Image (cartoon, rainbow, N blue to C red):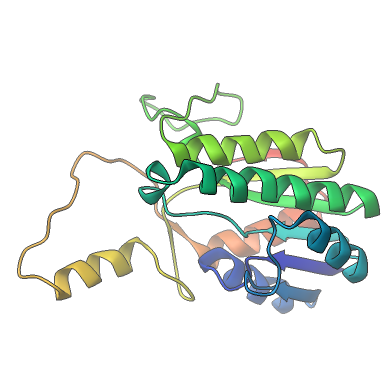
Length: 206
Protein backbone atom coordinates (compact mmCIF):
# COMPACT_ATOMS: atom_id res chain seq x y z
CA UNK A 1 0.00 0.00 0.00
CA UNK A 2 1.29 3.48 -0.82
CA UNK A 3 1.46 5.64 2.30
CA UNK A 4 2.24 9.34 2.72
CA UNK A 5 3.47 10.54 6.12
CA UNK A 6 3.34 14.28 6.77
CA UNK A 7 5.56 15.66 9.52
CA UNK A 8 7.80 12.66 8.91
CA UNK A 9 10.74 14.06 10.88
CA UNK A 10 8.76 14.47 14.10
CA UNK A 11 8.56 12.11 17.06
CA UNK A 12 5.55 10.10 15.86
CA UNK A 13 6.05 10.70 12.15
CA UNK A 14 9.53 9.19 12.32
CA UNK A 15 8.19 6.12 14.11
CA UNK A 16 5.35 5.73 11.60
CA UNK A 17 7.75 5.82 8.66
CA UNK A 18 9.77 3.01 10.23
CA UNK A 19 6.71 0.97 11.17
CA UNK A 20 5.14 1.27 7.71
CA UNK A 21 8.37 0.26 5.99
CA UNK A 22 8.75 -2.71 8.33
CA UNK A 23 5.33 -3.83 7.08
CA UNK A 24 6.67 -3.41 3.52
CA UNK A 25 4.39 -0.53 2.59
CA UNK A 26 5.60 1.98 0.01
CA UNK A 27 6.26 5.12 2.03
CA UNK A 28 6.62 8.74 0.96
CA UNK A 29 8.02 10.60 3.98
CA UNK A 30 7.27 14.32 3.79
CA UNK A 31 9.12 16.42 6.34
CA UNK A 32 7.79 19.83 7.28
CA UNK A 33 10.58 21.47 5.29
CA UNK A 34 9.37 19.61 2.19
CA UNK A 35 5.63 20.20 2.48
CA UNK A 36 3.98 23.13 4.25
CA UNK A 37 0.53 21.78 5.06
CA UNK A 38 -0.85 25.31 5.41
CA UNK A 39 -0.25 25.83 1.67
CA UNK A 40 -3.41 24.36 0.16
CA UNK A 41 -2.14 24.48 -3.42
CA UNK A 42 1.11 22.70 -2.55
CA UNK A 43 -0.75 20.08 -0.52
CA UNK A 44 -3.27 19.35 -3.26
CA UNK A 45 -0.52 19.09 -5.87
CA UNK A 46 1.73 16.82 -3.80
CA UNK A 47 -1.06 14.48 -2.71
CA UNK A 48 -2.33 14.24 -6.27
CA UNK A 49 1.16 13.44 -7.54
CA UNK A 50 1.92 10.85 -4.84
CA UNK A 51 -1.48 9.10 -5.14
CA UNK A 52 -1.41 7.47 -1.68
CA UNK A 53 -4.05 5.08 -0.39
CA UNK A 54 -3.37 6.24 3.17
CA UNK A 55 -2.14 9.54 4.60
CA UNK A 56 -0.69 9.54 8.11
CA UNK A 57 -1.04 13.22 8.95
CA UNK A 58 1.51 13.97 11.68
CA UNK A 59 2.46 17.50 10.66
CA UNK A 60 1.20 19.75 13.41
CA UNK A 61 1.83 22.41 16.00
CA UNK A 62 2.79 20.52 19.17
CA UNK A 63 4.14 23.16 21.58
CA UNK A 64 1.37 23.01 24.17
CA UNK A 65 2.54 25.88 26.38
CA UNK A 66 3.71 28.09 23.52
CA UNK A 67 0.29 27.80 21.88
CA UNK A 68 -1.07 30.09 24.59
CA UNK A 69 1.18 32.84 23.21
CA UNK A 70 0.41 32.16 19.54
CA UNK A 71 -3.04 30.51 19.29
CA UNK A 72 -3.53 31.70 15.71
CA UNK A 73 -0.41 29.85 14.57
CA UNK A 74 -1.54 26.68 16.34
CA UNK A 75 -4.96 26.95 14.70
CA UNK A 76 -3.50 27.63 11.26
CA UNK A 77 -1.33 24.52 11.36
CA UNK A 78 -3.57 22.11 13.27
CA UNK A 79 -6.91 23.13 11.78
CA UNK A 80 -6.27 24.74 8.39
CA UNK A 81 -3.40 22.39 7.61
CA UNK A 82 -5.52 19.37 8.45
CA UNK A 83 -8.35 20.70 6.29
CA UNK A 84 -5.96 21.03 3.34
CA UNK A 85 -4.73 17.46 3.73
CA UNK A 86 -8.24 16.07 4.20
CA UNK A 87 -9.70 17.83 1.16
CA UNK A 88 -6.78 16.70 -0.99
CA UNK A 89 -7.30 13.15 0.28
CA UNK A 90 -11.01 13.28 -0.53
CA UNK A 91 -10.24 14.18 -4.13
CA UNK A 92 -8.26 10.98 -4.70
CA UNK A 93 -10.08 8.64 -2.31
CA UNK A 94 -7.28 8.36 0.25
CA UNK A 95 -7.90 7.69 3.94
CA UNK A 96 -6.45 10.07 6.54
CA UNK A 97 -5.19 9.03 9.97
CA UNK A 98 -4.87 11.98 12.32
CA UNK A 99 -3.03 11.72 15.65
CA UNK A 100 -4.82 13.90 18.18
CA UNK A 101 -4.58 14.43 21.91
CA UNK A 102 -6.20 14.05 25.31
CA UNK A 103 -6.07 17.85 25.53
CA UNK A 104 -9.42 17.89 23.71
CA UNK A 105 -10.87 17.07 27.17
CA UNK A 106 -10.91 19.20 30.31
CA UNK A 107 -9.02 16.67 32.44
CA UNK A 108 -11.67 16.52 35.15
CA UNK A 109 -12.71 12.90 34.64
CA UNK A 110 -11.90 10.39 37.39
CA UNK A 111 -11.68 7.58 34.83
CA UNK A 112 -10.00 7.14 31.44
CA UNK A 113 -11.79 8.98 28.65
CA UNK A 114 -13.82 7.18 25.99
CA UNK A 115 -14.13 8.38 22.39
CA UNK A 116 -17.82 9.06 23.03
CA UNK A 117 -17.14 11.44 25.94
CA UNK A 118 -17.94 15.12 25.29
CA UNK A 119 -14.93 17.25 24.42
CA UNK A 120 -14.09 20.41 26.34
CA UNK A 121 -10.57 21.69 25.65
CA UNK A 122 -9.25 24.24 28.14
CA UNK A 123 -6.13 25.46 26.33
CA UNK A 124 -5.26 26.80 22.89
CA UNK A 125 -3.49 23.62 21.84
CA UNK A 126 -6.51 21.46 22.68
CA UNK A 127 -8.84 23.86 20.87
CA UNK A 128 -6.68 23.72 17.73
CA UNK A 129 -6.44 19.92 17.73
CA UNK A 130 -10.19 19.53 18.24
CA UNK A 131 -10.77 21.93 15.35
CA UNK A 132 -8.53 19.69 13.26
CA UNK A 133 -10.63 16.67 14.20
CA UNK A 134 -13.79 18.51 13.22
CA UNK A 135 -12.61 19.66 9.80
CA UNK A 136 -11.30 16.17 9.11
CA UNK A 137 -14.61 14.50 9.95
CA UNK A 138 -16.53 16.89 7.71
CA UNK A 139 -14.13 16.77 4.75
CA UNK A 140 -15.65 13.85 2.86
CA UNK A 141 -12.61 11.58 3.10
CA UNK A 142 -12.35 8.33 5.04
CA UNK A 143 -10.83 9.33 8.37
CA UNK A 144 -9.55 8.00 11.65
CA UNK A 145 -8.64 10.10 14.68
CA UNK A 146 -6.20 8.51 17.11
CA UNK A 147 -6.14 10.38 20.42
CA UNK A 148 -3.02 9.80 22.46
CA UNK A 149 -0.96 11.51 25.15
CA UNK A 150 2.55 12.13 26.47
CA UNK A 151 4.48 10.66 23.56
CA UNK A 152 8.04 9.50 24.10
CA UNK A 153 10.50 7.63 21.92
CA UNK A 154 13.48 8.04 19.62
CA UNK A 155 13.66 10.45 16.74
CA UNK A 156 12.45 13.65 18.39
CA UNK A 157 12.16 15.73 21.55
CA UNK A 158 9.84 14.38 24.24
CA UNK A 159 9.00 14.86 27.92
CA UNK A 160 11.98 12.78 29.04
CA UNK A 161 14.35 14.93 26.98
CA UNK A 162 12.85 18.02 28.59
CA UNK A 163 13.53 16.64 32.06
CA UNK A 164 17.11 15.73 31.18
CA UNK A 165 17.76 19.11 29.57
CA UNK A 166 16.38 20.93 32.60
CA UNK A 167 18.48 18.85 34.98
CA UNK A 168 21.69 19.41 33.02
CA UNK A 169 21.24 23.18 33.00
CA UNK A 170 20.67 23.63 36.72
CA UNK A 171 21.27 22.04 40.10
CA UNK A 172 17.55 22.31 40.80
CA UNK A 173 14.53 21.95 38.59
CA UNK A 174 10.92 23.05 38.97
CA UNK A 175 8.20 20.81 37.57
CA UNK A 176 4.45 20.41 37.97
CA UNK A 177 3.31 17.71 40.38
CA UNK A 178 -0.44 17.75 39.76
CA UNK A 179 -0.66 16.53 36.16
CA UNK A 180 -1.94 13.06 35.32
CA UNK A 181 -1.36 11.45 31.95
CA UNK A 182 -0.62 8.25 30.10
CA UNK A 183 2.93 8.11 28.69
CA UNK A 184 2.78 6.48 25.27
CA UNK A 185 5.78 4.92 23.54
CA UNK A 186 5.86 5.70 19.83
CA UNK A 187 7.41 2.26 19.30
CA UNK A 188 4.05 0.77 20.27
CA UNK A 189 1.73 3.48 18.99
CA UNK A 190 3.11 3.60 15.44
CA UNK A 191 2.64 -0.13 14.68
CA UNK A 192 -0.83 0.16 16.20
CA UNK A 193 -1.77 2.95 13.81
CA UNK A 194 -0.38 0.97 10.88
CA UNK A 195 -2.50 -2.00 11.98
CA UNK A 196 -5.60 0.23 12.06
CA UNK A 197 -4.82 1.44 8.55
CA UNK A 198 -4.35 -2.10 7.28
CA UNK A 199 -7.82 -3.15 8.45
CA UNK A 200 -9.47 0.04 7.23
CA UNK A 201 -10.51 1.31 10.66
CA UNK A 202 -12.51 4.54 10.75
CA UNK A 203 -13.80 6.85 13.45
CA UNK A 204 -12.16 7.93 16.71
CA UNK A 205 -9.84 5.70 18.73
CA UNK A 206 -8.21 6.12 22.13
